[in-house]
Image (cartoon, rainbow, N blue to C red; front, side, top):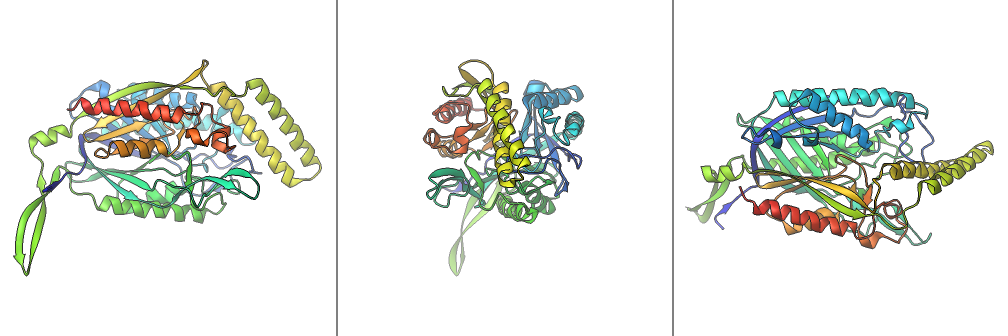
Length: 483
């Protein structure tokens, strides 16, 4: 081999960033074990980053808006509200907006169904304002669109650890660090550069649950993602777009704590790994070519960057947008709404009794169980009727790269399998995108063990494997189309 090609895209891009931090005092409880309800302060601001992407041609129906939000989950109605608001302020259709959540558990549960809880009266006005702010950011990004190049690379980061742990002493599975489990340490990066040479934005795609901060934390926080962005943006002087990968069974090696300093330390670990990968990227529009020997004591082999020819640049302009729906069967033992509501009532009664008896440990346990049932009610109410969940996959092909936008929480096998099958093409995999349903999609081998992700999964065992094959076919079809 006498040359090295770095994966690239040619397109038009515009970027905007805004602060979307909820007000202090808003309902914040995200964890069943939490004893607080309201946020008492802000660790770091929550942000929204809008990236407008378009082909070099002006095909209006192919433009895409990628909106990265620092939130854990949002109800589908809120996602639709944001997409509709963006469409009303721009010339893009709602389905061309991809809303990607960082999945930080420090943001609080922003659902109007929680309005009756302490601080919940602030949720509705906040969500309305959020949609308005996102629309303004999208319009700003659209106004900044210019010819750009995207260069992709990969690094490694050991923050993420496998989190399906067998507690032998207590004879049960827990969701926490599994020292013997395999964890995908792949970290994908991209640099979006204007033709002037200015860096417009960077992209970091990494799979790790933002669960550093847990039930002890009372502060609004982007978790590790905040410090990650700070590290990268300090060096690049451009917004950093974080996209959460397939992290259903991955979490930070040190997590479930109340100390924001730990979240910052975790974020710096990812940020420095991302910077190392970004600094290794070559200039856009070039390949690395062997130039031959030079005699200098030793006979040295010399390489240099060479501009791509017009035909090669044309290939990097390839632009394809695709949508597929994969029917994932519901698990047969999925509980009913009536059963779940009955369990919720039982745990609420036990919590009241424990509170009257002054038993704080039991109060915490009962609140956690009631919270699980409350979430299950929300999940069952939101699931479409029928025998299967209509799982929507959005695929965007930009030159050498494939961007995938996927709802729910997928196990890491999704990304490791697909990246192994398509090693020549960067696969940017964004989960918790456009919806948090159907929730977890674990490996078939995870079912039946009592693991949290299995217990609350709505889809049947084998759904992840079915999804992998369907998306692999979708990617192969896209690549077969060529330019």
